[in-house]
Image 1 (cartoon, rainbow, N blue to C red):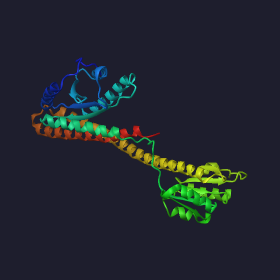
Image 2 (image 1 turned 90 degrees about the horizontal axis):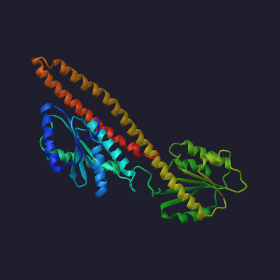
Image 3 (image 1 turned 180 degrees about the vertical axis):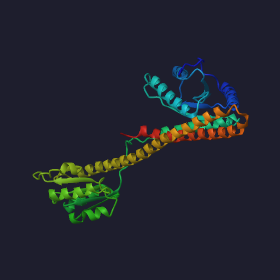
Length: 363
């Protein structure tokens, strides 16, 4: 397919309205389909950069396509004989290739948003109404691109309880004073730890002191790690210098510290542990969201094939029946069915757009 446009310049907004009227007349007369694009850079382009953008936009269009300066840093494109699926593909290609070309010479990366609507023979003649729909779709794409699923630099840590096992009560109280009012710091018996943990979802940190031997620490930590509701708990072991860690201790707990640590340093470690917990929970939510998007993508892909078959078979039936005048009423019904099948295909493509979030998920 050629992407060299017959026009070497971007046409005006007034010419867009005139050309759109002509294309709508053709669509209504011949039953063709056209797609409109509205493209907007995320920042105002001026001078040489604006001209470079125009040149790159023209370079990516076909001979039959037309591009127009729509105003307010926006550019409209008319794609004749193009279904919405082809328009979506064109919009993605234009955004990718223009940004790739211009970002080689920019200090900050450029991003584009695009609106896409497709028009068939049933299109309304109110052009302002169509333009309004196109602008709404552009705003939808801008909202999609503004959603940032990456890890935030400043995450809020979760308040809750911090449990100590096998450590001096005075040390626990000193740590509690450092933690402030957001955290309930308490000392519990090793025999009651699992009952305490199971009964509350607000215990993000467990600290096991030197008065609990290594085997017991290992047993408790194994129980925590094997429980799906508790495995995000941040587990800290405090051990005497002469005490050897359990064979699998380092793999089980999150960190092993000296029993001689001060409450101030321990609280700094706890605070970092709380941030790690928040990150773990965010990753779990992201994984679930990714699974939902994958299911949507797979369903949309599977639905697309029978829709294509239905449209293709309907077109073949119409071709075989066109020469018989008596079939005119049946052909009209088949055309109506074909229109609805194409509409279903376009709706399916819109559903498939949701999967663009997958590319923003952190790895």
